[in-house]
View 1 (cartoon, one colour):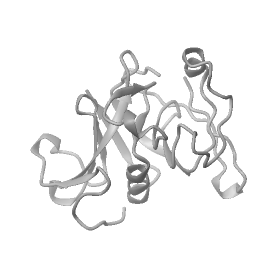
View 2 (cartoon, one colour):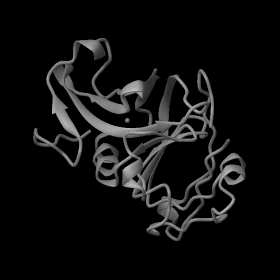
View 3 (tube, rainbow, N blue to C red):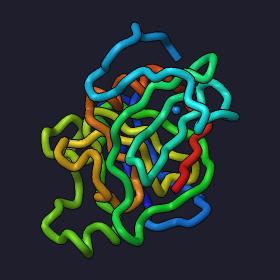
View 4 (cartoon, rainbow, N blue to C red):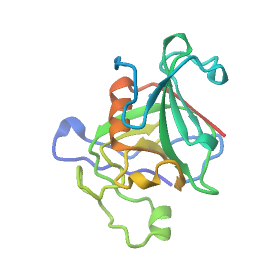
Amino acid sequence: MRITLHPVIAPTIALAALAIVAATPACARSSVAPGAINGASHGAANAALGGYEPGTIVVKTAERRLYLMLENGQTVSYPVGVGKSGKTWTGETRISGKYLKPAWSPPAEVRMEKPHLRSLYMPGSSDNPMGAAAMTLAGGEYAIHGTNNPGSIGGFVSFGCIRMHNRDVLDLYQRVGVGTRVVVLK
């Protein structure tokens, strides 16, 4: 499956189709004040996440949490939706692109399962499954993106993408850049 993000009106946000190589394919800096951030939370040093450099994104699929590693072992933790049964994957990749309000075309695999989906969702439309922002992962098959279905956060719901509340994906979007290391664990 391939994520297809389409060029949109402004050339500065032209998007391209990309594909990701994952270990088991199936279907991330600015500072913010401590405290709750729309479902995200700042945490104390987390020994279970030790060994990752500041700026690394770690997704713990079983927990349905995305962690952004900060200095001194601190983390920002976000609730996420992850791949449904048969669509989860593990591995390491990098953010290859960052897009605000991306246009999106459902991949063939998604359209087969959900034939009611349109062939193109316009940028910024309230029913665009990519939500407020998308960060494609190297190779392009998957992305970390927002959602227009906030009730899906916390579940095994996607075709392999990492789904976030729109507020949270915008927060993460501002904290990370292209090239950010992303580690997806079970």
